[in-house]
Length: 444
Image (cartoon, rainbow, N blue to C red; front, side):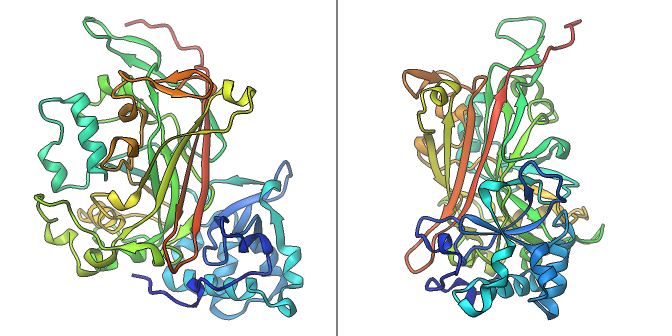
């Protein structure tokens, strides 16, 4: 567990003035990492750190030679075209570089003059995936989401008994993960209409989002070597926002007996910024289970996880239809919740994923699953918000939605705030649904 240190001091200010605004997602207390280049350029993608409305170009900082020692080695890795090598270095290197950057960005006019040339406005940047994602596993850590969806799919048995004991997950498709700004065609696949005897092939009519967080793996573990709970967080580089798009009609037909396939493999969108566990240290909470449910098995339990394994990360889900954009209407909030409601912590996901000897690698991505809270307005998917499509949601200027339509843009954002700490944020993650591509003939 990362302890509070000088980088978390809420009184710190930066010479980058936009970082000092109270509403900024990226004050000096945050310093999240990404991979970027100037928009429309042929420049090489390289590592950057968000500070206010700017990006600190780590390759330029490296070339200036203003950071030495251990942080300099970490800086060289963080300046590369992906963050995999930096992620592999582990918490000491991450913390050393973050501390050095914090020192450079503090309000010290005699130091920062050369660094001003290292800034690129975020509005002038475009982003790539911050890491080569070798593998992607999506979990199911909200008991509120699992119960609500279970009632729709299995009304007589909504929450299967293994949920209380096993962090449920499935292996997703890393090749279709895109960075914020992703647009994708409506997926097609087989569906079975009620009362029909034969399935049909066609575009999904029940396209949904999932409001999630992504967990980037840092140092991997050798195959055959499980990661213990006490060590799990040393294998986590940081968190991002994640939208795991889902075709619910395809899912309903295909998910038994092996789980999601075409319903989930066509698009997953992540935010460009990775907020480190160190930056999130002021927003930790004790982890506890609801009353009346069993404790986790011993291999998924530790004193540190019980004491501060949860995070209070506020999450917001918005929609902006094509009609709303034409009328210049702002995106509309559909729901708001918090990661504090998760039934399993990030450390437990890493430990369970490796308990059978599975070897994680730097840059691997774990999804938390849809983060729904205990009340209906905290649901993280349209499947829940529209009660399985039975209750249309009013949006914009007279439109309704049960599931997403072509031209819809979905925006997810996240932030942390509490008394005595500086608010930090994740930025946002956006994606747009395009019309379906022409499908092959249905020979079924």
